[in-house]
Length: 361
Ligand code: NAD
Ligand code: ZN
Image 1 (cartoon, rainbow, N blue to C red):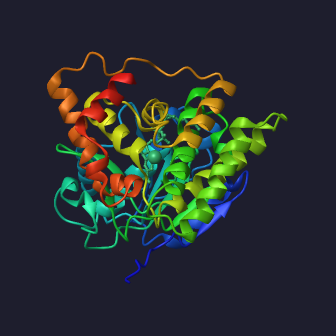
Image 2: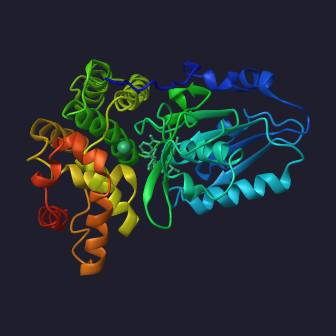
């Protein structure tokens, strides 16, 4: 038996207000005056001085504000890398991503692509990256994806939506300041929070499960229920703290495991319809009772408790070709299906079944 030897985030700081310590944490990592720190910041914070005034720019450091209108693309990474190379005198000292899963993934990908040749799309897959990336720091402002701990950066390319999974992907430093999530709108808080809940269910119900994944998965599973199903009124601060840790554990849980059917099908929705990860997972998971009965029942209870209405009929206007593309995209994610249904998964699920499920969403 051969076990995989995984890298982990080597440094993490947790605490409300810990964002104030960012500058002192990264200062020793500055390589030279000509090697700047580049901040990739969600443009939702563009005029938010509460956050941005605490980023101290020295020498050639700069902030690049990025829209999350669409989820990260391989071409977007290529463009950012080119822009950074052309506008800096030396290779940057580090890349700092500040935002939700989208910004964290962009920061990881840019850091890798600044030290690896060619186009980003050629690294989508498992263990294709040759050189370590630049020093990179992740600062989540939205909890749930687990992108702050994971070994992947999910990107949409010309042919597929697939992560760059590599030992060089995880952050060198993560800063967890739950206060940064205080401005997240209620719906988004739920959708991305459910991403974490679904990670835990898919990991706990998966055939890849071992004690490592189980311990983290159970922690995330319980924390999500405390946050979204609690009857005693938990303070907003406590919920922010707990969901940030739930996200971390949910991400850790899939290190040694995999996600499952909701993720496979939601990648299809995203690829063909551009539906985003958090809400897409919710739309799919809502229809997966037959695969995850207990998880889906809890999900429906949380949805009700939080007063969330999911969109309906998202696939009804698709033509045959689009539906086939969606099903193909979903079925391509073999490890996800194998985790969910076992080695013989192909005998347990068909394109026809997937089509029926998509039409119910
Ligand atoms: P996101 O980063 O796309 O952000 C969603 C919305 O929330 C955006 O409009 C953003 O501006 C807003 N937002 C973020 N922080 C905010 C704040 N503090 N206040 C107000 N608004 C805020 O959403 P997400 O769900 O965190 O990330 C989704 C992305 O993460 C997808 O691209 C998905 O593929 C990826 N993902 C990656 C992994 C991984 O392991 N790498 C895992 C799961 C998902
Ligand atoms: Zn996810």
